[in-house]
Length: 116
Image (cartoon, rainbow, N blue to C red; front, side, top):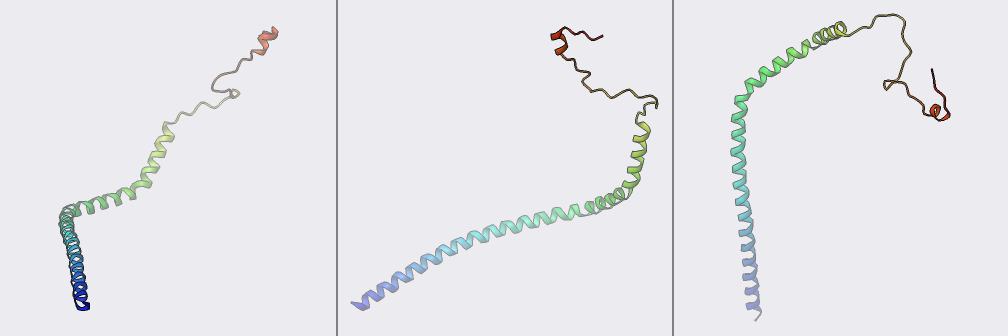
């Protein structure tokens, strides 16, 4: 009886291991398929990058030229702004007034006061 139970245990253990290995194999098969798709995408991206490479080098050179000219352009822009800014004539200045105008108090009207 003990021999029969041992054989049954070995058969069950072997079946469980076979099922586990089948499951792991199917997972690895899906991973391999996904990696193959990824490798294809990487090859496609590399082929696109090879076409873009010379253009990027040109853009970097042009950007360096523009970056070198920025101080000169900034100075010229400041001169333009200074030349185009309105400068009011210097003279006697009026006192500052609020942008909304002077406020009128209604307290005067209540007591009958009329300002001139």
